[in-house]
Length: 601
Ligand code: FEO
Ligand code: CA
Ligand code: CA
Ligand code: CA
Image 1 (cartoon, rainbow, N blue to C red):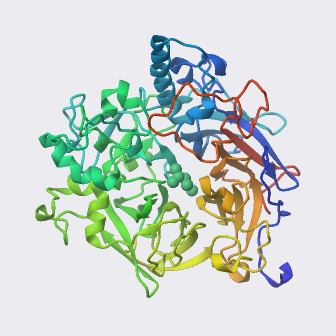
Image 2 (image 1 turned 45 degrees about the vertical axis):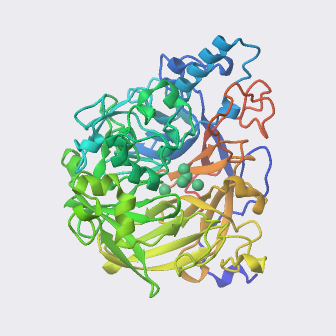
Image 3 (image 1 turned 120 degrees about the vertical axis):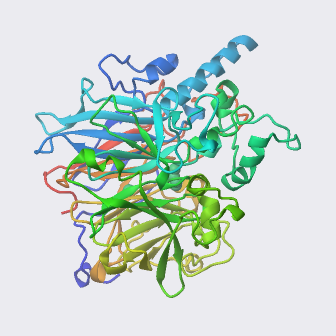
């Protein structure tokens, strides 16, 4: 490879060597410490974690499972105190519960019923105060007044925006169509300029249950929903929740799924606040919701719909962001949702999803804007949006630039310029330059920053800067973040594809500017079977928070009918405790430079 001196490389750390073993690794000269683990108490009155005696009541006061998005809200000017806002995407029953032992049928039924509520209590989110101790180490403050859990078991929320109150959001539990209990499958997210937290609801379809025979007649309500269900993969039947909770059983509540698949706004500084689901931002498998302020002052939110052949969206508020936080409460309630059409000439047309515009009409099954938003995917289909290779995190930088992680798509056969590889096992990253540097623009230019995978295997068709080492290339970009210098960091989630690279998931520093553009360097890697989530830097650039999700599971998921009396007897790792009596635990890692100062500078 050419000498680094010939490039404009900006990341100054010594690259970590790639690998895949039972623990985590960070580049030399950095500390990577465990800050929070699944089960850790997050309130003063929370019981200590006992993996053998789990209960929903305890889990509601303890850190949840499968940490994904991490947001940070500074609570002082020095940056020594802050709030962590963490999503808990899903549960991995195969490694979270101990063996059931020899139980009679009734006792087993009771156990499985109780485990459903534990799973529900382990989903959602956590707000927890953290502070630096005298030695400069970050510690959780269990006494923090803002600490709270948010779950699909017991957190009341409201729905607002154009679809709120819509007939299709009305259920037996809520004839008003404006209320819902809980949020789930909260994958990535974002923070707003006014320090609220956006939790994205991703694979909500998986949580709905039905016992209806395939050929059973449908009642009128279900008939109305059937077109939508087909497009959204409902009911998925991944979890047993619907066996015990009618609101997850579509035979009993056919409209219940319409209350999920939204972006949820939480005010982490007010522990009594009611989270709001903003229907104006559309309903789909929301990966994340990263925000910026356009040159015209509007709030702009970039959002991927993470499924094969789904679309990239952005939302632009009607009004401008205000200095006064309270005045911003409506910015996510009134605005325009756009979907991206990537054209072969390198341009993007942002197509508005507005009822009565183009094909979004009554004749085509959309009675009003509520229908357009509830069935965002169907509306975007009619507009001619470009089906992408699984759009995950989409990160705006504030200068009119955004990066979109296209994680992979092994089912692609027909290619197009923005999705140029068939059988795309490794994904790619697209750079967007909005017209005039304005994030609110309705047109943009796009280009491919990197095509992922091993560059030394010609058939893969990977494209990196040639300075990228054997350790630096990666597959399946998923989450990403900018550091205080506006430099791009990319986290990977290979799932069951990890054996195609042999590498563990990790965090990579990717150059986007100058002669080094397209160079990637490995900074951190996960324990075996763990996914890299949640990269977030403190505003001073001196601390990096990472989330290690589902360590030891290789991304395998629970399926309907899975016997929940399972075992954690033989996981691939027992990270981070390495205690033979403890399964692996999803955990937050905090990274600082041993010599102090900004990371990678
Ligand atoms: Fe939950 Fe798209 O990863
Ligand atoms: Ca993700
Ligand atoms: Ca991000
Ligand atoms: Ca992923």
